[in-house]
Image (cartoon, rainbow, N blue to C red; front, top):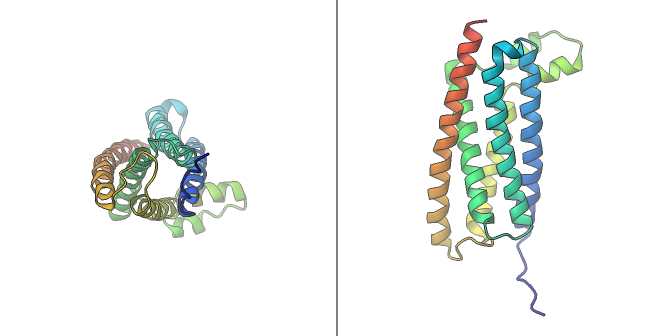
Length: 196
């Protein structure tokens, strides 16, 4: 019986990390919706909540599928990981950049002045800080994409140059989709906040 080639230890770490990140993305979406419902009614913020479910859910599902494909050595592991990484990076980088430059992000000062003794309320406010929430996602995907480029995955190109070419093409295309999705979501959220 022919044994499959030994994989580098970073590949299973990539798979398990993506599964953990998928769960975290789903929990983050739920926490953001709960935090929004402390301020807005479902009737008032239905579109914004719907976007959070669709966009957060899509990123979570894609990342989870990517992790599963990597662990199970599926032929779509490379492409799916590039798609999930590109969309997540486009979405997160755009959100952090726009919220910080526009001054609409919740800052640490606001979290401290929140003044609640209730740990749940404090954690909701703290978790909404986009930089604290999304910087680890950005860092993970940068490291994960380094693994994707350096080590061949099932279904991915064998040569480094081919992996770079195919990987960057998928990353750029789906990163743009993630960035556009985040701009639409921020526009809706900003409009909703301005009408409060």
